[in-house]
Structures are given as structure tokens and as C-alpha cells.
Image (cartoon, rainbow, N blue to C red; front, top):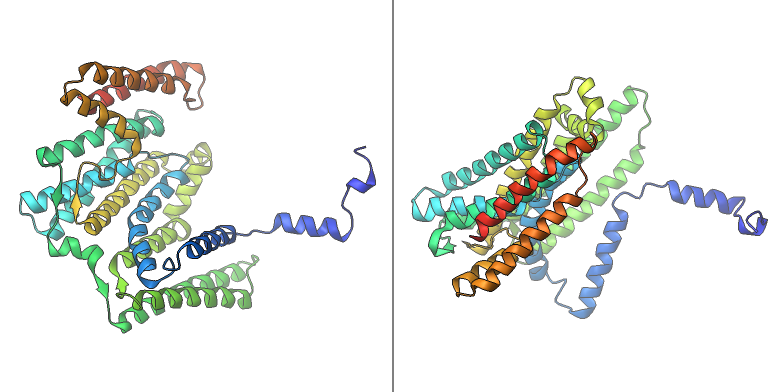
Length: 389
């Protein structure tokens, strides 16, 4: 049956299938998926593709998109950072408290919030590299611990409204002058064209295969069409948003950092095979610590963007649904339902211990597993109880 020639594709069909399977489609499937989703929403509501709605969507995307940029760096290392969401809220809270309660000027308050994010990243990076605790455990406990720090920073008020012109202007500024948008778009297209053609020139000089000039011109023309379409949408509404410029600039900067610098190649090397990178002379601990610091710094920037758009910082800033269990337990305790509160706390601790026992340890044998996981479970349970107290 398996040798039946009728079941095999031969000739032109086989070559076509092999060619189809080996084609690098890049981001095309994602773009097609987004177009499909947009068409469905547009058919459901013809206002979806209006300039007002698309501009608002870009403003909403700026903060989580910036946050995802930092997570991308951690994933390149083969690590994960679960705390970036809460870190963004904590850094925004530090900025708000300094500006509103302490009277610190807006630019200095923003800088302080970003530096707090850098410090948190350094702290967690040291735990991962020096103490050899998996990043999943460190950042999971950090997600709970930094949520407690957020509640402590905000204090009894719970919500802080932002009125500083500099802070609110980060997400509230729109460049209405057309020449600013044209200059920004022209710089973006010129920079992209320069990068791709210089890369082609270097590859040809090194006798390496390179894309044809016609193909590169087609890619540049596509970028021109995308940029022109975006500018038309923005200027049909309120103008070019500053938050979108910050987000796009950060994405371009991270792309350049990871693909065009020695530091970026070190990140890829450590993420690909850490032992090989170490033998090649790369300081893998420094790379890991710096990436965690950079990811948390970007998370702080995302928190500033989100706070600027919402004009406030509150107890749920940057938090996820995972933490609602502990907030519910605390609210039950405040209402006097001590029995329900104790039940929630015991359930949470029991679930966390069972989960941590199931997490696979890093290579090194069962000894590592027996030593690392009980200690991590104790640290995690302590962090949970500190928030729920």
C-alpha cells in the first residue's frame, strides 16, 4: 500500500511542493492574518477602519508593543521575564508619586521611573546568573513581589491622577504640521534603504550571496507605501502621535542593536548555545544581566507611555489577571470573611508548590532539581503571602 506509485507526487508536482516548503515567507503570514482580522471587524462595523479608530488603536498598541520589545530580548537569550508587566506599573507609580506628591519636575520623574526599571532588571539578572535560579522562577516571584511594591508606593490613595504637561504630553502630543510627518517618513525610508543597500554591498565585497538590487528596490517601495499610508491616516485625524514615534523608534533601535552590533550577535550566541559562547570568549553572565536590565528599562518606558495615555496610575497598572486571586483574598479579609480568605490563601500556596515541583530544572541532573526547587517554592510562597497580607 505504501509503495503504491499513485500515493507519491513526482515530476513537476514534487518539485513545486519542495519549493513551496523551502520558501521563507517571513512576516507575510502574520500580515495576511492581520488583514483578514481587519476585514472581519470592518464588515462588522464600518467605523473600524476610520482614521479616528486606527489612530486610537495605534495609541493603545504603543505601550504593550513597547513592552513586547523588551520581552523579545529576553526570549532571544532563551530566558523569560514574567515580571515586565508589573515592573511597568511600578515604575509608572514611582514616576507619579515623585511628580504629584513630591513635586519633582516631569522629566526628572520620568527619568527616575526608568532608572528604577533598570535597577529591577539588574537585580533579577543577578539572581538568574549568579545564583543559577531559573528565570521563570525569579521573574514569577518578582511579579508578585513588585506588585506588593506597587501597592506600597501608591499608599492609601490607590490612584494618582497625572496633570504634569510633560508627562501627559508624551501620549497626548500630535504633530499637526505636515512637514514633520514628511520629514519623519523620509528619514525612516532613507535609513532603511541605506541599511539594506550597504548590507548588500558588504556581502558582495565578501563574495557572499546577496539579494538583487531590483528586489531591494521593491522592498523599499513597499516601505514607502506603508509609511505614506500611515501618514495619510494620522493626518486625516489629529496628526502624527508622539507615542507612535517613540514606539516605532524603539523598535528600529532594538532591531539595529540585535542585528547590526557585536552586542546583538553576543545575545544570539548566548541564546543559541551558552557553552559555545563561553568558549568563544563571550562574557555570558554580563550579557544575560544586561539583557534583563534592558528588558526592564523598556518595560518602564512602556509604563510611562501607558500612564501618559490613561492620565493616571492605579493599583492595577501593569498587573495581570493572575493577581486577582490575591486581591480577592485580601478584600475578603477586609470584609471580615476570614474563613474564605484563609481558604484562598491555602489554595494559592498549594497550587504554587505543586506547579513548582513540575517545572523542569536546567541541565545538570537530579541533584540540581532537588536543591533548587524547594528553595524556589519557599521564596515564591513568601512573596505570595507578602502581597496577600
